[in-house]
Image (spheres, one colour):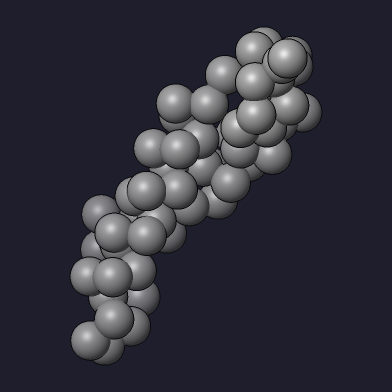
Length: 63
């Protein structure tokens, strides 16, 4: 249950939701910034997936 207390997980889930909506055809028109937005959201999702809260707090390791 420690993973659900981690802000990295919730950041990844929150970033994944707009990507999922776009996949299912819900139009989020961002104009010329859409590719940058998708890249930014993808980076946040990957950071949340690669995060391991059992080794530290957030993205920092225990010392």
